[in-house]
Image 1 (tube, rainbow, N blue to C red):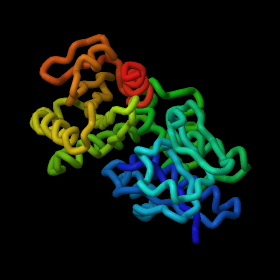
Image 2 (image 1 turned 180 degrees about the horizontal axis):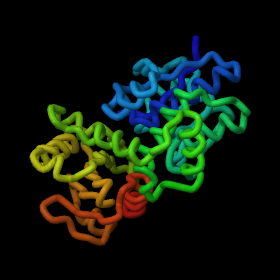
Image 3 (image 1 turned 30 degrees about the vertical axis):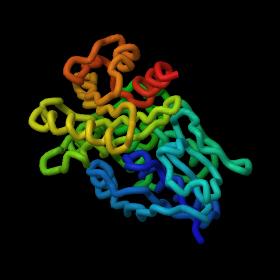
Image 4 (image 1 turned 60 degrees about the vertical axis):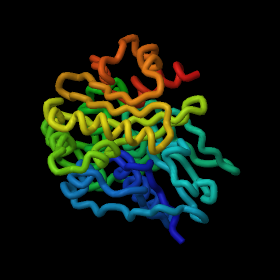
Length: 306
């Protein structure tokens, strides 16, 4: 039985490409391993894999009894419901250490960088394994996506250095153009069900016993969602009720203006005002310079809930 490597629920490009790349590396190091994912590809990930001719991982929903590696997460809320019945061999991530625990020592690569693929690319270098052209291409795209073409507060010099190396391998020289092409795909909303948009890049968190959900739509222009904003607001209220959460947020991030309009459904909006120092108006809040859920939204919210 193959070991499986997979990313978080509602997989994004980093969690998909990170799983594919780590599986490739581990296979070359002699492991019987395959990439997997917990849900279907989003439009951006589909674009990236098609561009470089890489097959999508299999969707796997149950991991009980399997040996596994986690990429791009270490939170139980973002893991399979039966993770406790799996054997975790390792974690490769770029987020804070979550609440996943193991019964034995494990391989762990968790770095404060902008993208899991930055870590995986560095692992190839550490083990002196050559990165294939197609794998270099998808990892490059994942880093451009997660760092918002190097504009995000999470972006580091290490991300930029790895991208320079990956771009040489895969032959993509105009990273700005590649990034914009990806974000145009990511921004597409026409014909997409509202709930699918809300969940496109959505994560649940446990904050001091309170359920908090936060989704993000990264857009080349906020006007793209003008016609559906009211529907998005209603859907996060519905989602909050369905999950029994204290708060559900949706970040509408304008990558050109470098800011986020935050849509809020909460039992207590004072928590949001206390966190960001601005009172929401009609369940909305503009946050200039805020582009990263991981670094600029969740840590501050967690402090408030404590």
